Length: 280
Image 1 (cartoon, one colour):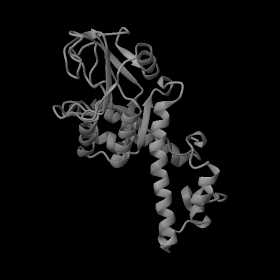
Image 2: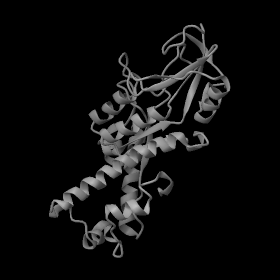
Image 3: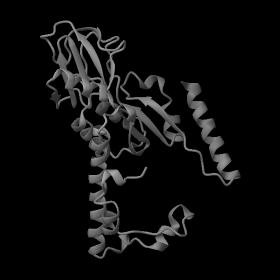
């Protein structure tokens, strides 16, 4: 991994040089990293990551897999009172190592895992299992999880300690993130001032885009709150928040014709910030 740190440095130097010698914008450098616990950091060139990458996708999942864990597990647990193998601990670890919160992008799973229970009557989290179920590796997309629930009339449970949903049918036990869990995780990313979130993979969502809509609704609420706060400050006459065309022209120095819209104009144009009208 020391060589990887050197590679990041060389990439950054090359990107800076190219931007200085051409009209092209500076290349954005990113990487995907594990959620991060104390045992993981010995292999990561953290200082090089902090200094040379624009951001990192923190893979906040696959903490447990039925291919090797002989017990049911919350594979994307936001919290875990008995272990540091969880998203909250991982994010704190990265920040504690000197990586800025706004360099971190939370990567969320739109899939779950299916275990084969050793005893179908013992079906809670962290109970004995004998391996994967349903698929060879136990990996099941969210849309297939929902179809499975509908087909067998499963009763889905939610565990607020881990922030995970799970259910069992016979000896098959599945953990996954439903809409409420996704909302909580996106909200957590915002509260920790992370750069944002990304999902793996959008195509795993159901036909109604339940998870994408849930995540988008959190961002909509946050944006609306920010817009309204700005409007209130402006109404109070705080000149520091004044938004005008001159200020817009200075943004990145390359948008002389940028037009600025007020909150009310944007609200009308987007039909109340409807997710269907979101671009990008």
